[in-house]
Length: 97
Image 1 (cartoon, rainbow, N blue to C red):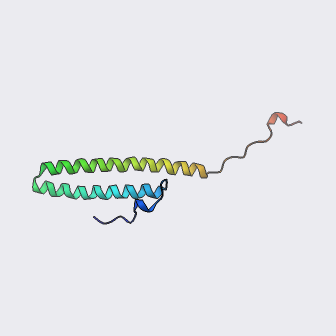
Image 2: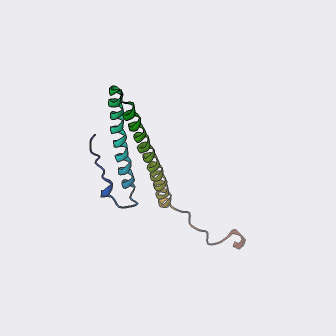
Image 3: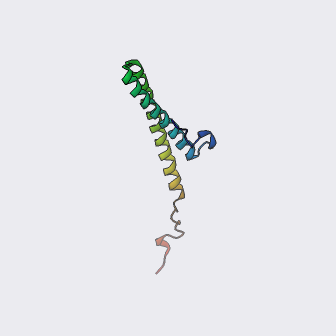
C-alpha cells in the first residue's frame, strides 16, 4: 500500500481537502483489505476472508458518507459564489405614464 500524498492532519477543519484526504485514506485501506481477501481465499481461511470483507465494506461505506458530505459542502460553496440578482428598488405600480 502506498502512502497517500494527502494527509488529513495537514488541513483545517471545514477544508474540502481534509474530506478528500480522509476519503483517500479510507480507500487505501479498502485496497489493502481487498489484497488480504485474496490472500485469505488462497489460504482457505474463511474467518479471515469474512472479517476482511466486512472491514472493507465498513471502510467503503464510511468513504461514501464522506463523499456525500464533500458533495454537499462543495454545492453550498458553489451556490454562495454565484452572483445574486440585484433587488428591484421600484415596483411597476409606482411608474407613471
